[in-house]
Length: 419
Image (tube, rainbow, N blue to C red; front, top):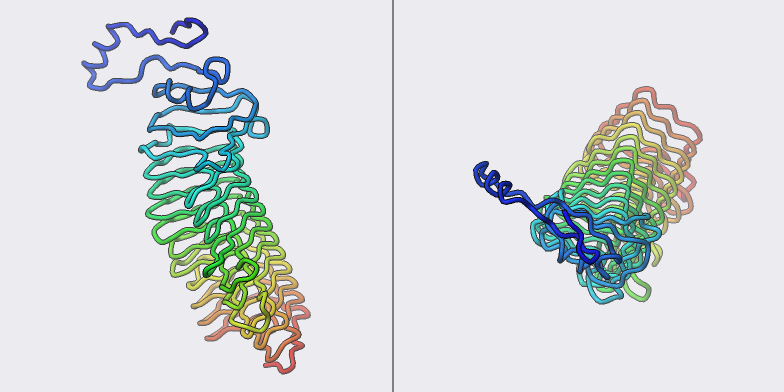
């Protein structure tokens, strides 16, 4: 490879083309390392000039532009990390787009992506592509409908060590939205202060919202202060303060959920941290602290699952719940967990979980519609208070309850009537 006038130029011998033709495939020419802004003034100009296998290295700075990869198997990385290297969409559209069958060989590494604005996918839009995204920060992006930080349609990307901060979607998926066979692996990602705020209906998934047939895998991820909440001056329900799964299988291992909320105005509220409908989730080794479902127009509708709502019980093992709650509904169920079917809970701890100020409260910690099996789990200081009828200060089981090595300490009901 030669360099002329500061630009990278490939030179490939004719024998190489003859050899590749005989072997039945044609690789790209010698890979180049391309530098921005030294060789090209913009990131997009460098992408346009690149070929498969190239690496584009971007120096510190703010680059106000919209990026398109056009199917190229290249690595685009920052020299000094996301804190110093910003791609600013300037509210002009989706900031970064993959829509030409990019594979895992297309890599985006170490950028902050800000000020994207679109109906779907403000910061990033992935359609029928599966790129590798790592060490990136998505912040202050907007979706007029879904997926303010990222939207994925029919893709299987991976996100590793990425952060999603203060992205806002009007309807669902403040941090990310997934649809149409979009199976995504999230590893060591952090979601903070993202919101789904609807003005014409229900709000779903403050951090992540996924439709049916979009299997989601979360490993060692952190969710903090995300909200699904009906906007001020409007009415509607809210589900999945952090994660909303409308049918897909969700797997959560060693994740933390702190102070996430699903807050409706007059409508129903489900899952302050996680909402999982129709497919049984796997939740193992996770910590849930201070998650809530709050009715903002009190004494109306139903509130289920201060931390977790699942319509079908899944694998539930080794989890900790502290200070999760439901408040202000006419009917409230499961201050920490609400399970719409039979459920099994093992090796878990429930502390100071509660239902307050609700017309009817069932299960200060856990509500299970069908049979419930509880093994090696502890229940401390869980309660129902300040409302009408209360059933089960710690647990309400609609079917047969089976308990093995489950101590209960100071779990109470102080509603106007108790059962």
